[in-house]
Image 1 (tube, rainbow, N blue to C red):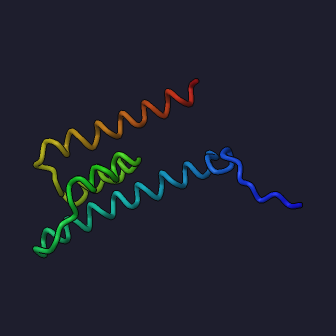
Image 2: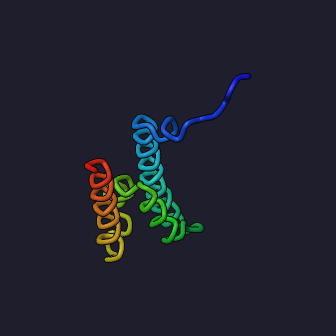
Length: 100
């Protein structure tokens, strides 16, 4: 009998984690561009809550770079403090768990 079970360590390999962070940050960067584009065109906007969710899911580097690249949300204090704060908190948490 062939066993087709996947080990959690295979799913959470360093390679897969790195791929995840690359993809989520590309999505974060893209979503900032898309929201800026929609703002310029007067179209339906991406909710701010969604931008923060993408950041909290690990896309903080992408959303922060996108914010300054596209000069989008740079006048809103909760974004200029919130995005970097969430990102730094995540980095510190990741470092903490890798050290242990």
